[in-house]
Image (cartoon, rainbow, N blue to C red; front, side, top):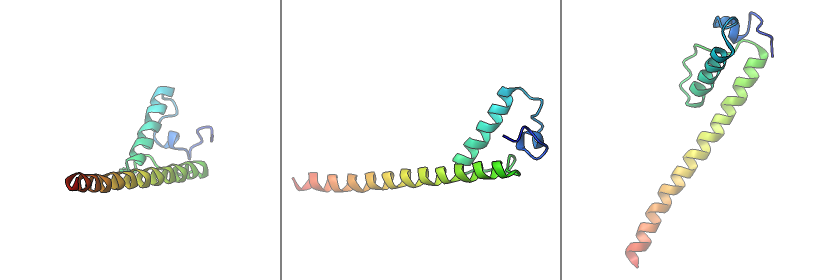
Length: 89
């Protein structure tokens, strides 16, 4: 979006002359480390567009983790209820 200006993550990580595959792998690496909340900080936002994309991606991750954790909690709670019900029968 910023056409690889000096402020973009592509320029800062010396990927301007890299192949599209290398750029794509680097972007997937960033997305994956952000998604699993490791966030090493080796690829980070500097431009407005990068900040907006990062914020949106983090919000998606918060929703995903909340949904996953609530489903896991609900499943574990229902397992206990079902086992009690089976013992009564």
